Length: 382
Ligand SMILES: C[S@@+](CC[C@H](N)C(=O)[O-])C[C@H]1O[C@@H](n2cnc3c(N)ncnc32)[C@H](O)[C@@H]1O
Image (cartoon, rainbow, N blue to C red):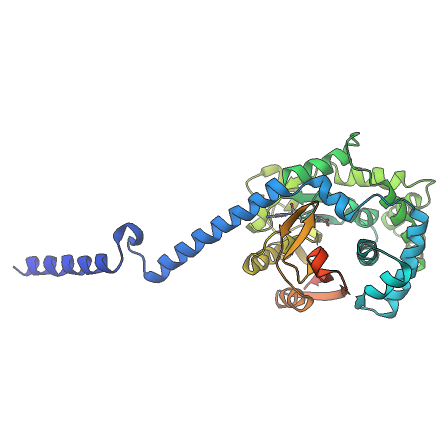
């Protein structure tokens, strides 16, 4: 008798719970859990939609030609670099490019690229101080179809892995690394960067001091850099970068933990040591995390994933577009998320990074370009 009553009560309860939430949706889940499932479903659908935009509309060549056109006159660009550099030095940390664009008749992309190179020159110099004998493993995340970002790095680091989400971008870089005839011609960038370094007295002094080091590995490394810089052409620097990247052009999804590469044994070995701890002394990521989604939560995930890749006491160099919701690739608009320097710095410092260099370039045209400036941060993991 008692048993029968218990069953009735149980059935009643089940019926009630069925009434509250239809079983086909709920199973044993609470309302909160169900809401989360629906939210996750929409997020995944949205994510797939954004991935499709990149896969179908991001033209590798369109991107390069929009932002990194061949430099027609390297000598003139070098002069401009020096002039802009002096102006930047007078306003350390924050620079509005509008005035110099007007007085020197420069295009926005020209000033932006000068600012990018000035930052990368500093990163490369700091690395040379920290690792005078090299032994630097580098990972570039969202490397795109470009190699400009590796030129300064490869002067001081003998190991670069270029990770990128899109097949067409990996192919573009691979064509260049293999020296195939269809590869993009980056020669003018090599020539410019070689001369930027040669004009930096402080950089040259570090190399010269290292040439006199008692440590043979420091001396040999300095000798290699010296011979690259003082070769007749910039061909040595180019060949060196092709060797430094080699076959390390891998898939990487910044929105997945471990960049989604743990399933691919070959890729995984490039990035992680046998201990599964990060082995990367320098992680670089240029215009990627904020330029690969329009969702702020995903941006935070992406930031966490690249910070995870940095070895303890290793370095992270990031450049990003500022306050953006889109940017151009040829005639297409790609999604982006609006971030500013305070948010970027905050994510880094709250995750145990010390900021060594932070710069802001202001004055890009939000209307024409989709962003109002650029942010650059070089930081070290505690
Ligand atoms: C603005 S481009 C930057 C390219 C290059 N780093 C540069 O400095 O010019 C943004 C890059 O993010 C890549 N990207 C898009 N979705 C990504 C994802 N889920 N994970 C990693 N990279 C992604 C794009 O394919 C593209 O190469």
